[in-house]
Image 1: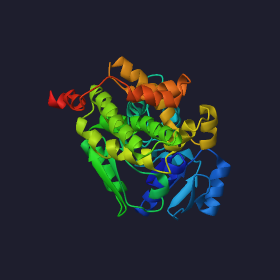
Image 2: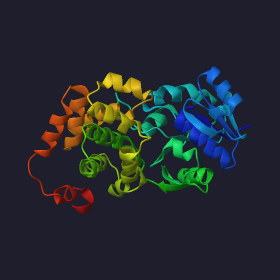
Image 3: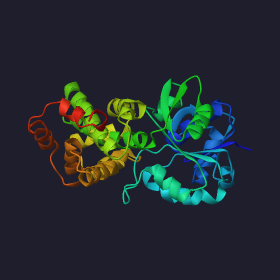
Image 4: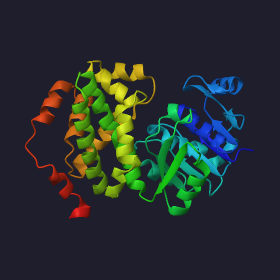
Length: 337
């Protein structure tokens, strides 16, 4: 019987299932569609979401929810599906099974972090958050990767022990708030760097967006209770860099298409998978207003995505804002007050 289950057979869930099998676990990779899972079982490959990565013999593709009765459940569904999926798996989980959430986003209606959603729905299960610069395509091919897991010390260290391999290094961090917000909000900035690229701008522009974008992420994150040092780590600047620059990044690719003038609906269809930065932009914009936090890049992204603003004008509006001293943003941080 599997001692680990991965719920969600997309690219990231499949890559983590492969990783866990190589780490010595018996793994059930649980998907929703019987035909796809049978094909995966027969061909020993997720041809749709993770082509070219063979599935180890210790990995069982299945739709059997009874195999969720394990010691560790990796939850790998899009952020908007987390609550519904948690309700679906709840009857099959044993108390004490650690649930590791890997989605990077927030619940749109409630503005809850995803760990808060899981704790509401699965009160008998410890919850951990896995984040950091980690594309599925590279993890599946054993390229050296570092991530961070956030939870209480005992839970985080248990997950660390179960997931560490020679090519997948896991750090721990008690700051669940900061780790989750860094992972969710960097998608907004990745969309923006993609838009800049689509407009024909170069490295200077992308570096400016990443640097000033990180300032926005940290401002909001600290206001919501995150540790400022977390945003200088893997789930902050690390994830921001990889998502803003990688060819694997859906958010960056979507941004490029938007910058080239394609409408949002067309862009989302072309990407073919969830672009978390779209919903994250709406949430981050609203959170900034609620917390009275200045987030000029996020504000312009919101206007482009949801109000039909011209991306070129949005860039001009950012560049022509009132003059500032750069250290003002640092001095506003609570740890230097």
